[in-house]
Length: 171
Image 1: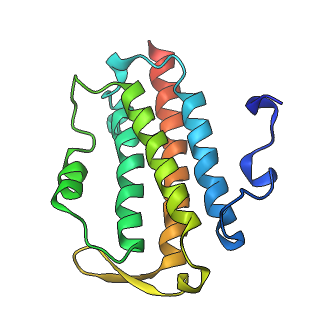
Image 2: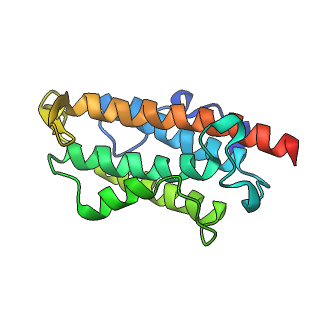
């Protein structure tokens, strides 16, 4: 059965290797990866940094998708962000003619695969443990961070869809 004929990931059953309690997170991230590829078909790179009505560019959304997962999973692992991660954060959405849609989509795909491997190794017993987030070390549980990673990713996929649609209709 082709992927477009399959139901959404949350209706496909268990993803082997992932703890049962984390299945919704995995389903959401896999759905995001699939939708991103679909929405970005034939998107022209010359529109990557356009900001229709002053809203975030497609390039920003693509960079932010990878960056947010990287940062949130760093907090899950009870670590602080590195200088490289902080630099990446500052550069999200900054136009760069050397960056292509394809390279950003590929980067997001790699990041999804990386976090899926991490999800396989998260002990269920750690889900209610608290972690410090950001410079202020605000409290969030591991499950809270994981849920936020999934829902925030979906939010940006939705915003990206709208921006892509608007820009394609004008070109």
